[in-house]
Image 1 (cartoon, one colour):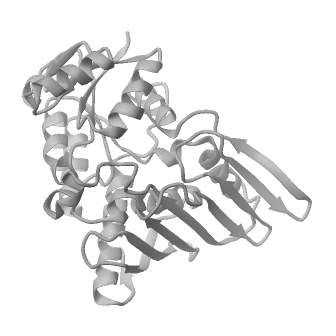
Image 2 (image 1 turned 60 degrees about the vertical axis):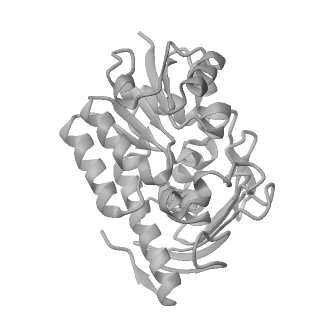
Image 3 (image 1 turned 135 degrees about the vertical axis):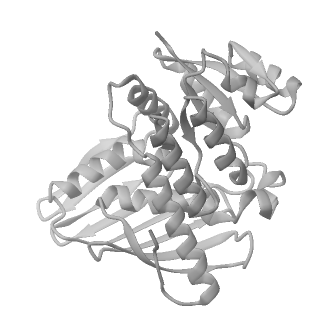
Length: 329
């Protein structure tokens, strides 16, 4: 039986990436769409062949055809919407950041466990074949002892409607770090298999920053430099990991688009380990659907999202206090 998805937060990502990925997978379908505007819900639902449309979230959660709820509402509403969905017995894939405060993220993780449902977080980059190959190479010791990594992420305000809730501090909770930079936080931890324990951070603005630059220390002492900005789309979307026996170079590795490659450079030369054949959003939707179906392990769960929130809190604390900050939790 096909797995039914219900969508709340039907903006650009849901429209251009998530809904098509759901419809394009033989094991899933768009079961329902919810928006405060009934007309908008009907228009989106018709485009993506949803079985039902709603202008009341509780009504959508009562729909028995909905197995998974995808949440891409404003950041400040993620906790409320997730708690309601898991209480209704629905599995949840919530966009990053999963919450604006670690206490709320912890509530979400605990609620999902108490209701025996899966809670995934929208870290699509960890689903790319290049990221999975890089993680395997590091775990297998092909790089020797890893000591440094760097990654850059840029979307650009021209790509997304930043004049909507993203421009409201109470709804967005921050700027480039929360909108994009947490992808780098999660990707670094995923690739190296180590949590972030200590950070420093600088931003161009005190509120709603357009540029975020952070340095992180992982639990094994690996240092990571990361930057995200919303100044211009199309800038270098790469990541690199250095080790004593070689290094990995992923061109396009921080972009959701397919066609990126990861190369291993060592004393024997250069070899291509992998290339991503499909969008990271497609891989993410397939992976979460398969996890709910019980045929795959969950990749990028609530614990990963909670850790990213702890790291984001430490990064903002570092930028404000102008000092090194420890990651709590």
